[in-house]
Image (cartoon, rainbow, N blue to C red):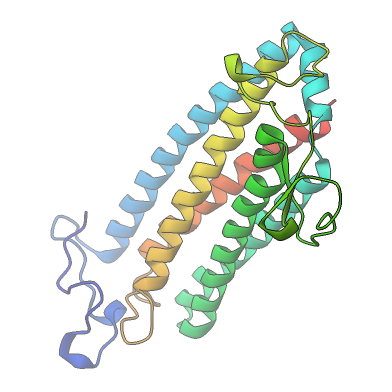
Length: 260
């Protein structure tokens, strides 16, 4: 971590914002040199993230060739509309994240913080859709019904009709946990192992990215303003991480949802 001459969250002298008082770490000659080193380090780290997901893509390619019917059946259970909506949500979040960096560079603090909040909302919406519309129904058979249209009907419901149960729908679990009663291929558990590993690992990265963006927002709040025209390294690094998370989903979405 870089050593700086102010405590995060405090303003020296009670007047100057944090980005004005920021000093680069002693082992760097200039702020630009520090920024370039941080950016290079982040790109190297992101390269390892690409290698991590590359293993999943290789797994997908090999097992799809070995068990094409199982993968075709498994993919047919996915609703491309939810995957497409999540794709749109992440693309919007990439735009707002990029705009927040631009706003910090031009010292438009209010607009920058607003775009960070929108990015966080998009990340939370992505995870909520993944859990409520995909994971929970496929694992348990309980469907999220925001309209509560099943309330008072014959279907088994919970929370006043907010969730309803569909007999025989659940059990789409990975590996030996697979218990879906209407499977037509003995290797469908391979598909679900890949699905949950790939999308679950990606969702974990979304949560990590949200934590980084929340940290940026906290240290850029009014009265602190640690990021601005003279120092926005932390924002840039969080943005790079968020963009690679979005890029990985651009590959996962067609492979899992569209190729039957």
